[in-house]
Image 1 (cartoon, rainbow, N blue to C red):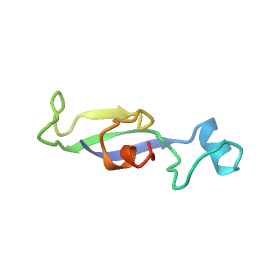
Image 2: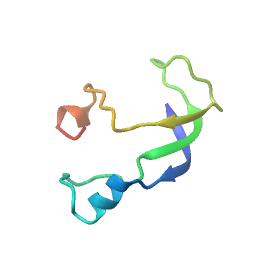
Image 3: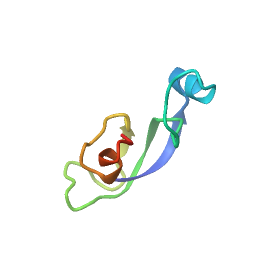
Image 4: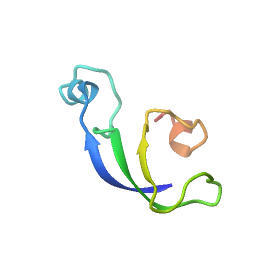
Length: 73
């Protein structure tokens, strides 16, 4: 899915990452609590329509993409 982000929250974990109080390997995108509107749908995706309002949790790793394979889940 391609999602146009409409809102994003900064949580306590983001604050700790920003202040170096939690271990992480940059680059790390802060503000992972998000919601938005579906703009486009890939051919392998089902159950969504363009215009759907969605939320996401990018902390759940797919285990298949190049980033996951490089250890950047």
